[in-house]
Length: 85
View (tube, rainbow, N blue to C red):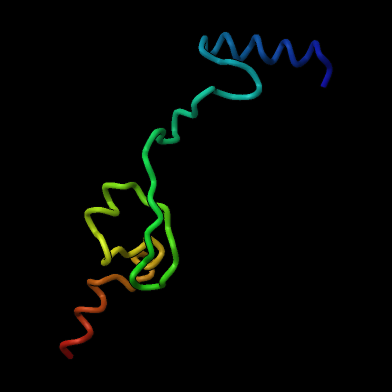
């Protein structure tokens, strides 16, 4: 694109959003959670390491089950319902 078109696009975006900072985006992404300390924890089902917030890691400890395993139905709820049969 030409410099003129770039400038016109910038001015149009600036009119729509006064806080628009340019083509490089926002300094801080609004949809991204910031400043949450992450800790690597090993999933008790699949054995893969996952980065999770420190509070979740402390709460679940050695019984941590990652979201992939929970969505696949391999979490602790699934395992406990199959054993009594």
